[in-house]
Image 1 (cartoon, rainbow, N blue to C red):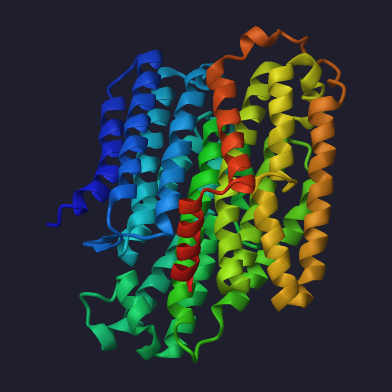
Image 2 (cartoon, helix red, strand yellow; image 1 turned 45 degrees about the horizontal axis):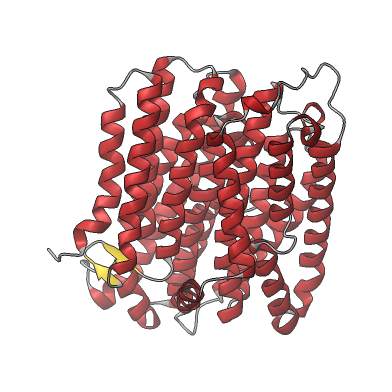
Amino acid sequence: MPAEFPLAWALVFLPWAGAALLGFLPRERVAALVNIGVSAASFLLALLLLAEPVGVQGWTRLDALNLPLVLLSFLIGLTTAVYSYGALAAETLDPLRLRAFHVAFQVFMGAQALALLADNLGVMWVAIEIATLASVLMVGLHGTPAAIEAAWKFFILCGVGIALALLGTIILSLAARPVVGEEDALSWAVLREVAARCDPGVLNLAFVFLLVGYGTKAGLVPLHAWLPDAEAEGPIAISAVLSGLLLNAALQAVVRVKAVVGAHPETVPPGALLLAFGLASVLVAAFALWRRRDARRFFAWSSILHMGLAATGFGIGGPAGHLAGLLHMLGHSLAKSAVFFGIGAAVRLRGSQRIADLGGLCASYPALGWALVTGILAVAGLPPFALFASEFLLVTEVAATHPWVILPLGLGLLVAVAAKIHTLQLLCFGDPGPGTPPAAGPEKLHWPSLGPIWLHLVLALLLGVALPGPLRAMLGEAAGVVG
């Protein structure tokens, strides 16, 4: 076994070993600290990947596409664990449910790493299924009728999606077997090399099933119905990991399949289908934002919109389109998880998720209110944050190569930005709703609540105005990996 191989698997098994340990820790505070410790160790281990050679190593691969996503996943995993240290105490969960949360969280993190690092289609499918099951458990933890309904909707819809993805995986491997044999028919690297010699009709069929299957997990319209409920009813930490991590893993799977199918000159261009799903997601989500009265559901719909924007970039294709899609995934994960952290803190303070009940945050809790102002501006795609840079790059590329896309894309962006600015005013500068409890003072907001928010926003700012040279080169190389 190569020396490099164990590191990739260590990133999988360290969180899973932590999950096994957390299953035996009944004390809430101790379990929360151990959860942070495991997450910190996993993040430090992920940083070692920067020194690892790229390429296929057994059932795993490391390349410019998944390396930044792995680092981002474990960073958000660490900040979510820190945030949960104070937030879970207000979730009114009994000891058994708290233990279940910590176990499911670390199981999810290990599965997320495996989904991103897997070179084998079957292994990746299993990893995304494990991550989904862990997420379903976290969504339903409150045990309320709404939480149970959200968990079942998540399980059923994503179960159908993962079944379709499995069928697409089988079809794709069948397309490759006449060329490479049975042993290597599930390797991304091998499939990319031999795709031009496979049957184009079989490749087209496989892409349709895989796009619909993993597109369900990525929250693309019309496969999105589970996402608003799941992000609104579970513990606030699940909103951060769903929008910032699981959606990225699913979209990365779609992008890799697109690269394989697109390598055959006689297939139907896969980018066209991805572009259609992306534009549909942008338009439907943009107008749906104006009907949301629940803060967490509002930003869940924003996740659908941003996944649509990333899919649009990958659908447009080319180095600029792919770079826009990748940068958008990174910027969205950082900004959206920061906003969910802020909304979670506001919900704890006010005891309600309704936007009308959360008004006046800048006056009542200035540190939290201004953090949310900054986060919502970042999520709205305004300068100088990363989402502005990715959207500007996307619009520029669309104008140059697909001018007919400008109208639907521009309409979706304008409607969404207006909705987010309107909600920002209601949340941060509006008047508290009737019956809202009086402000309890800034002493109730400790660093585990505010620290992760500002860390994410600073990183999103740096990605927008001062993208480091090595990361810029990595994202450019990743655009080549995509196709």
